[in-house]
Image (tube, rainbow, N blue to C red; front, side):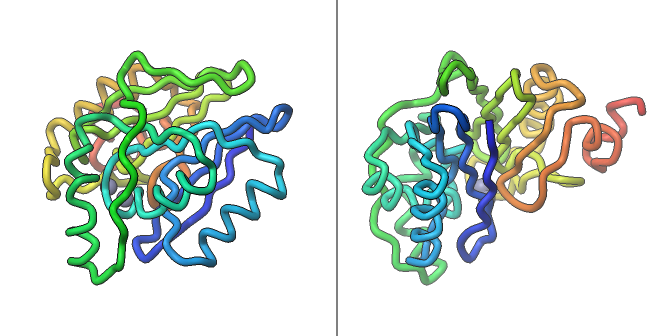
Length: 218
Ligand SMILES: [Zn+2]
Ligand SMILES: [Zn+2]
């Protein structure tokens, strides 16, 4: 499996394309493309690598992560997946965009709701999903146990955690999601691919993340 990280849009979020290099089967995670150049870049990456996008997956419903949903849906013509608890954010997104002065057409509806029972198979590589609320109620992590990769959205960042001052955010719930949900199913050597900034791994966050350090002995 190959990860392509694509930083996008005025909010500097990370879009990811995650795909199986043999079959080309892949998913696009948080396709936040906003400008034509950003959209062209995603088109070019998928064409150059012969990637067959099977799903558009949103780690959560915040504006920066769904800015390119319409573009991705129109271009790839595949289902949009998101947790049902974040649909209210999708519904508010055009209003949010106006607040930031962005011209943003209403995003397409969610086609498949992500639950803790959801899984996606990419040429035999199983991706599982867990709901990890706190940054938003419907935030999810996407986990590939075989290749030890986690796409964690805005739950946790290198040496930091997602903000919890937005609608539906809660720091207690967020820390519980990291410690008792994400870290229960991902081992120390799992790579974390966050929604902003650079990649990290579970062990480094247990060791160095000021929000978590005291809970883990290293
Ligand atoms: Zn967010
Ligand atoms: Zn974000």
